[in-house]
Length: 153
Image: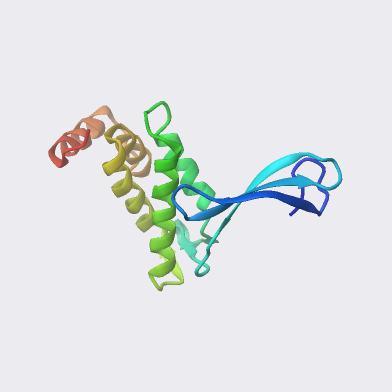
């Protein structure tokens, strides 16, 4: 594993343990050149998933992008990082076991919204406002009224 500090190619694993939700292995590493320590995560990847974006563009599924979007929606909310990791892992597993090589980006957006709906209603509305491109305050009002009907927090 390449060191993120000095770019040396070799590092030594000092500690390995599963994450709390058992979806990854957390490894503490030490660079053999500069001695810096860093953490890596190893996850199972069942198949390569390609996301079909608007305009028919295609790109590989990027777990970090989904995680960043969910974390941004949950910013300053009392949502543990573990819950975010569980949601993103769940979405990734669903995509990999779906048996489809190409997945429309809209499906991922809907999966994120569904997951956030069960975690935090404010994060759900935040994500929806960007995903569904709310342009007026009325859009927020209409959407928020449906959240109350669903039984959000």
